[in-house]
Amino acid sequence: MATMQDVARRAGVSAKTVSNVLNGYPYIKESTRARVMAAIDELGYQMNISARNLRAGRTGIIALAIPELSLPYFAQLSDAVIEAAATKGWTVVIEPTGGVRERELEVLSGARRHLVDGVIFSPLALGPDDADHLRVDFPLVLLGERIPHGPVDHVTMNNVEASRAATQHLLDLGRRRIAVIGAFPGEQMGTATVRLNGYLAALEAAGIERDDTLITSPGPWWHRTEGAQAMQRLLDADIRFDAVFGFNDTLALGALHVLLWSGRRVPEDVAVVGFDNIEETRFSMPPLTSVEPGRLQIARTAVDLLAERVGGTGPAGQREIYADFTLEVRESTVGRQRSPGGAEAVSPPLEADPTVTPLDAASGR
Image 1 (cartoon, one colour):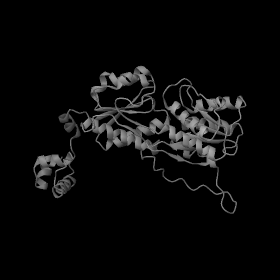
Image 2 (image 1 turned 45 degrees about the vertical axis):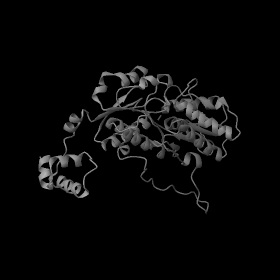
Image 3 (image 1 turned 135 degrees about the vertical axis):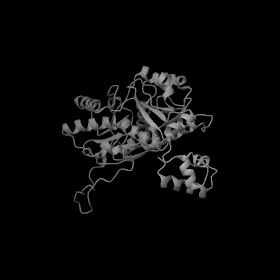
Image 4 (image 1 turned 45 degrees about the horizontal axis):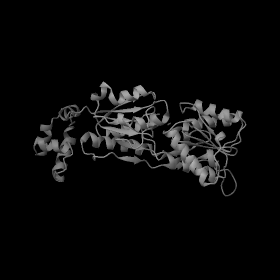
């Protein structure tokens, strides 16, 4: 195998210069950098990442702590974090916490912390009163809505405005009895709370009074089963509604299944919107309109912020970054479009979704 000294001889520079090029030292002439990179390519040299990390006192490993991998959103987020971390030369260890408080606290204080260079953490059980637990002695980036304005860098979704936009889309279609699935009664802060706030803000702006009979709680988890059960309860109670907003896609897909099974037409009788834009939304029948919350941006930003903290280049204060969102409108709200001649248009073949990474293609809250 080629060594750094071999590269140096081929490029006509010192081994130190080769090392500076490999480590991104900025004050290198472009002509020198080009010679070194050409020599690396010619010799097939591969840098010993483990040795470099050892010298720097690092492991080259980061942890991603999430509630669960069974929800498609977290699975696809994990893929995106792994891909972003690979550009930094990092390996990612996934730690599913199950949304259990003790396991989430273990993420912040457990003995395994010395095995990783930093942690990206998406809590579910911890809340605003637990902000002091985030004052740790290792690089940490927070995801989600459970602990706003905490003492560490925080990357999250623009949940209120995104939920408001999803609700407004239904209002613009003439829907006035919009049911929601995903509320958590009594929750002070969290994804359900902020998405409900966006929904209510859109209704208020449209002059529509809140109707608590349309606000359903699926239980502690946002899975398809809970979405289906919540929809069945609405139907059994004979509550009138003409649209449904599921606070994540799996809830919406479960509700969609029950609606179709009950004989309701979607979207003619009931329009359905989800949140997260998981890959399955493009393949449901009908395809599900969904909020794309900026999953790739969240993953890449979290990794970039963590890299700055690991490298000691981040600012003194914490940063709070909100990802951009879009509403992906599909047939669950607008139906199949008709051509100018009146014939039903055939949906075009599915194109590659730019929000799905190559890792996603193998494949929440």
